[in-house]
Length: 86
Image (tube, rainbow, N blue to C red; front, top):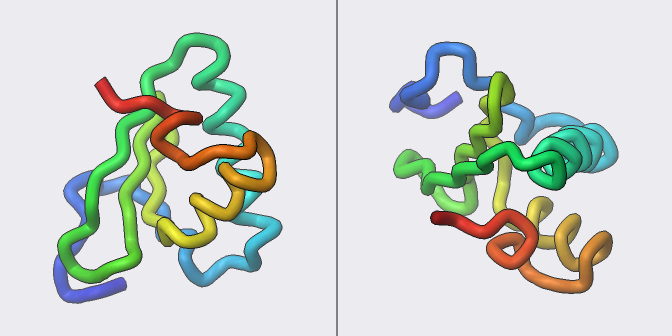
């Protein structure tokens, strides 16, 4: 992890995991979103292309490139269409 700690103490850094493992996390968050859970995404200021994603008890640090690829492959659109921000 970079020199700046994510604001959530329980945030899991999944950037180093295999893409299939990151996609599993995105699938879980997507199912929660379909059930009405709020998904919040925040820029991780310590470095592009990292992004923080929060949904209920899930708090991850991931890369926006794999997240966008997952959204396109699974939904045919960008991540902000799949998980709209309020």
